[in-house]
Every structure is written in C-alpha cells, then in structure tokens.
Length: 298
Image 1: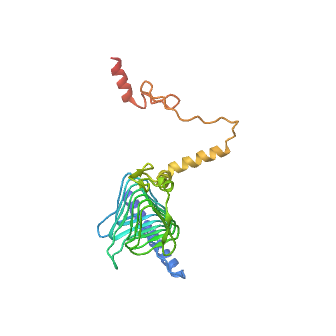
Image 2: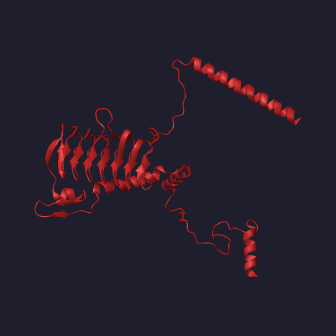
C-alpha cells in the first residue's frame, strides 16, 4: 500500500508541475511585452579578470547600493556611500584611510587615451555626484558636490575644489588653495584657520612649517562617525529590525502612567540554575548540572 501511495503522489505532482508550466506558457503568450524574470545578483563587490576589490576589514561603511569593481583597494575607516561606483577595470584605484566617497560619486581609471590609475589619499572627502577620473587627490583635500577631476589632474593637500568645478586634464591644484569654476581656476589661498580643520602641517609664510590641527580632517572625521552609524543600521538582520520597530511602537503608544519596562539586567548564574527573574535551568531539563552539583557536594 505504501508503494502504491508513493506512486500516486509522484504522478499527481508531475501532473501539477506540467499544468503549472502550461499555465505559465499561456500567460507569457498573452503578454503584450515579453518579459523574462531573472535573478540579479548583488553587484557591491565585483571581480574583473580575476582581480577582486580589497576592502579593509576596518572600513567604516560600504553602502548596499554601492558598486566596487575590479582592482580597488580601500583603507581603514573609509566609506563608500549609496549609489557610488568605484570602477577599476584596467588600472588600479587606491583609496587611503578615513576617506569618504559620497552618494552617486564615480571613481574611475583611464585605459584608452592614457594609462592613468587613480590615487586618493587619506582624510579626503569626495562630495555627492562628483567624478574622479584617472586623477590624484592628495591627503586632507575636499572635492565639492558634482565637481570633476579629470585625467592626469592633481588636487594638492589641504585644498578645496568647489561644487560643480571642473579641473581639466593634466591640471594641478597646489597645496592650500581654493579652486572653482568651469574650467576650474584659482580663487584664493586658504587661511591657516581654514586649513586647521583639514589637518596636516602648513607653512605660516615665515620661517619653518607650523604644525596645526590634529592631522585628521574635521570634515572627514564627521563623515566617518556618520558612516559607522549607517554601517550598524545596514548590518541589522530582520529580527533586530523587528525589535527596533516594536520598541518604537511601544514608546509611542505606552502611557507614561502605565508600568514602564525595566532594562534587562543580568544577575549572573545562581547555583547553576540561571539568572533570577528568568526561567531557571533545572536539574530535570539539564541533568548534567545536577550531576556536577552532586559531585561537588561529595
């Protein structure tokens, strides 16, 4: 009887599978525009020619919607924000420590007209929708939103390229200057107070260099702290998200006159039976604990 029942189940399942395929085919034929459903894999990290991105384990944050492709190296405390793309499919892209690549920014290399890699130093802030193409950004510089740094160009230390500026091919921004416009030109030199927030050692103009700042860009540090918060939120599983939502609803709906929940307190283990106020582990549910206690009494 068992074998007959198994044969019936197999026959019915095969018939149901064939009927499902027929209905799926009928629905596809009735569609005006043909559509093929595909599973699109995550493109956050993509290898090119067998070379995979190398991201420091201590990186602050890589957004789920960011794309890091090919021969890319990202240092400690750096962050890549939502929609940003770093593409190294011919030359190398190197990003230092505590550097941020803003939302929808593009970092690329050159392989056609030139053979330029892209090097971005430490404590660098690349603004949203900016383009860094086969260029070099020195330490502690700031690239404004939607600015462009093109092939072979260099932005010096503690310099600023203003929003929307376009630094042409092969151009160089000296250390400690503000550039802007399209094409970008020098606007003025930055003051010591302005460079103080960008870290490093600057020259006061007379005598030896004067060391000011902590060596870390204040802007870069602010972005790093925000990146760590985003990393925690994006790293939560569904259980943590549900717990956060339940706590938020409880805070919204609970009347302050009602009993308020107490924070969880761990009083430690008591005689091998767990923490007071919780369901104790008994010798019935954990006989090994009972045997241990009996051995200790002997």
